[in-house]
Amino acid sequence: MRPAPCLLFLAGFFGWLATASAQADPAPAEPPAPVETPAPVEPAPAPVEPPAAFAETPADAGESSAGEEKLELQFSGRIQSDLRFRVAEKAIGTFYNRQALPSGVERNENILQMKLNANYGRISGVADVDFIWYGLPDAYAGLADLSSLMRVDPFALQVQALYVEATNVGVDGLDLRVGYQKVLWGKGDQFNPTNTLNPNDLEDVLLFGEQLSNMMVKLDYSVFSDYTLSGVLVPVFKNALLPRSAPLGLAATDRMPMLDDVLRWRLHLEQAYALQQGYATVVSRIDPVVPERSFGNMPFAFRLAGPVFEQDLAISYYRGFSDMPVPVHNHTVQALGEQCDPADPARCIDGLLGTETTLNFPRMQVLGINLAGEMNPLGWISEDISPIGYRIELAVIFPERVEIMLDNEEINLGIVQPAGEYDYNRGGARPAVLEDTPFLKWVVGLDYTFNEHVYLNLMWVHGLPDEFGAGDWLHEGTVVREGRTADAPMDDYQTCAAVAVIQGQSVAPCGERYGRQFAVEKLRPRIGDYAALVLDIKFDSDRGLLRLFAMWDLSGYFEERWDATAGARVRRYLSLFGDGFSAILYPELNYNFGNGFDLGLGALLQLGEDFTKFGDPAAGGSLVWTRARFRY
Image 1 (cartoon, rainbow, N blue to C red):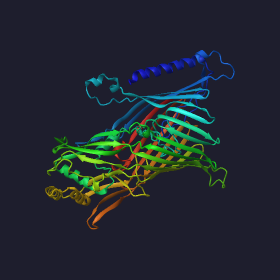
Image 2 (cartoon, one colour):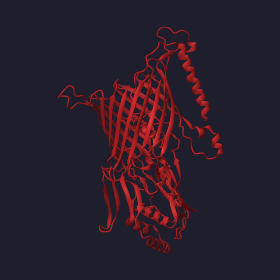
Image 3 (cartoon, rainbow, N blue to C red):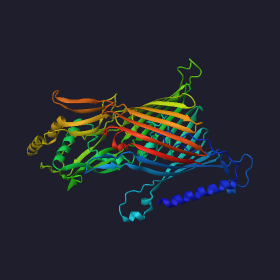
Image 4 (spheres, rainbow, N blue to C red):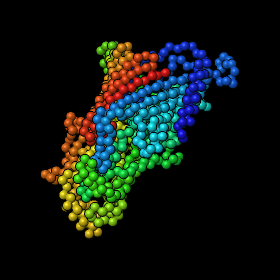
């Protein structure tokens, strides 16, 4: 659909709405109270509603009699401008597969939000739309792009909400909501492993925890007035929106997803051998495949929520798909063509081993438990001691096993081999990238308000949105953060492989033997543990807010290699205060000048080595930013 007619229609509609409100001549309202700026890791807050709604009677309704229902409309929104700078270049790969994020302007984004709330008796509707102008043009593919407005001044429309809701549908206490919406059941503060119905919106790192709206049908039934039973059907699965820095991960061919250690060590060796022969292994193409649209693939969920001993308790069940993909097929093609390093013309390769990767979204079931409330263990000392708030969110995830097919066209690296000779199916089964072993994600948080100026929130986060599969301190399982082959005798490997080919045998044992002894990997648990802190300090009658968010990766990193003395592979722990250190520091300052206008500035510092969670170039690097916003 072309966006221009849609924009014109909505602009005309809201223009009519503004005219109607002016004609209605409502009583003047006071300007809205100062609005607290949202947390740096929180999604953009809901727009501030005007102090009073105005009513509009349909043209054909005539004069309203006493008690007659009226159509009530409420219009609000915001204008926001974000300017961000990347402190230093972040890059991965080398001259034949380098991906880089340059330093300088990272984002120049301008948003016009328009929100309309409509109520007519038991029926209501919400339309919440963001019009986004990105400010930075895409790379031009040709001269014709200079005549394309979408290329020169790219913009987009994002629907935050677009739904209709009816209360007491047929039965008292039964509510129905249909349309684009967000169903957020989690109680954790921005870390919500039980929020599985909406996909994660990871495009903007400063809005961590935001989720995308999706088309849903939602029923809520009030049971005994205090308890609510909910059911949600999602007709079409929607995947997560990935960050702009995600393409940097394409160059990291050493981060192999296979769970079979022996196979990974062999592949590290084979990649090193291929490079010695003049052929570099790269990811040449990635094809995500979403689940087929069918009745059997419609995600759905149920939840029962209510108070238990004055604490909020909710139990939920979800069946559907993970919104983060995993590889299910790697097809490798040998391509001739010399390439040389511009910085060192004597450093050349003869060609590439291009891997075409297919991604899929694994099925899963999730049992969720949420508990939130307050406790005051020290209240007996003094009435001035405030209660401590707590939030517990637990997700028990039951994934479906996922295997990967590894195949190739004919590859000649000094050893004459027929097409498909590289057999990676150990024991007749394809290697797994995900087991069906259940695993846990959780958030445990404590928050305390010291006084009207100071607020503190501490959290233990077990598992981030991009982490999936069994592997933590409860269950063995790791992921590769960096891999290579150190000082392998490639001539001996080539001789072993050549003999195997002559004898009509597989070269796999040769790769496994030398891979085991010479592969070096940096590993960490599949599901990480993190300590998070949010500290708020308010000043100047709550107009100013100084906020610090910090997050420290406590998962632990290991370097694993062969130890000739021990005659086995051993692991060396990388200290959390040394090579294994990885953290985020996010200070920000916001000030509300009144009348809906506020300014903010801050920095997002991502610290650690390239193989760590937050030091990874694919995380985007450190940023400084400014923001101006006007709410109406």
